[in-house]
Length: 482
Image 1 (tube, rainbow, N blue to C red):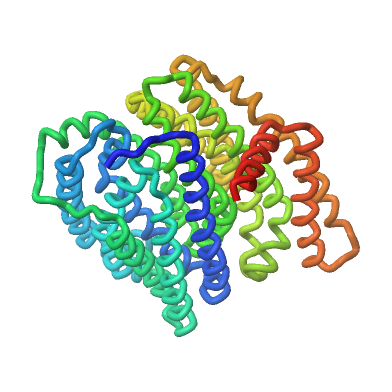
Image 2 (spheres, rainbow, N blue to C red):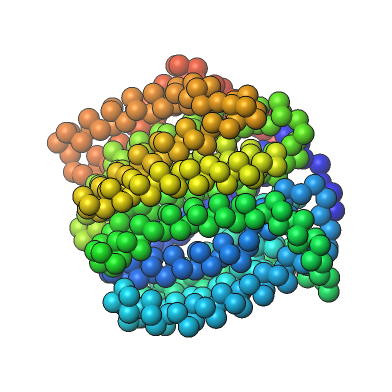
């Protein structure tokens, strides 16, 4: 089936993707708060360790083929089915490796329960085979409304399972049950709504063609996932599962916001950019709009989160999680740059330069490993600061190829994001001063949020920020159609 990719479809798809990410992550956030009150930091730490191994396995299963399917101009049933059956084979092999290795991993981290938890959660590898293929169909056709429905249903059902098990005293298994139920429900609902089933087709020739593009993305994704999760493994080994749980909770707050916006941009922009891959000028225009608009939303959220971190943690997670506050503040500024990374990299993928994508990953991760090795010597908080330094350096590296490829380099990108950043920092300084008011902490927290939103909008209008005018125009045009 063929679908025309135009501005209306892109905006509509982005809205549905934002609703999907925002709605599900919003519910998930509430669920995580409830679970954090019921469970201990070390129980969250166990799951974080297990997810590292599952994440690496999932990258190997997809092998870059999914992105290759989205990027390819013409795709048929032979392509889809060949990738599906290949992924099944890889999943069987990897699950076998995880199953056999689980006891040794548990001994290495001195956490006996890791053995059984890893074996059970490893089952999600097989569920993700179906989910990933269904997501390819949705992404190619920009049908993100279907993903919204499946994700919302899944997060509600998994929330019921996770909270019920936590109340019943199942500890870490409540988190395991929640994750498995989430994946099962997504697969089931998409199975009903996405009318694709694997056919009895398999072509090694087609796989080789897809792999010629996808292998570079596989290596890049593998490097990225191992680099990001290496901190979790190090913290879990050198420090403790409780320290890892606190570190992870601190990262979760800014990550939640960024994953909503960044994930939406990533899902929509690749097929959108790919549709115009031969028109570099158009790709640049779309890329610039994505960077300017995402910065307009993300900068005030991240600055605001850093300011209100302490009272927010005390209110939502209780005193036992206060050690996570510095991590929230550091990661807020680190994740602030992620959408800029994503747009630059997705543009490279869309124009078929996965070779540059891989080179950038190798350069960034090499620098990141050096920073990590140095920061370990100074403790867990220094590791978080090192991640922020790495994020700043990576933003320059990711933008560098697009100076030549799309005539949109870092200096021009910096000029585009600077207005939103300046206004966000000014807003942050205003709401920070409210903490000195002689009022209950919860009242001050509420005032900081309300006044922060109000001040940012007023300043955006006063300084005539481009994104403010652009979004206002879209809203007005939509209202006229109602």
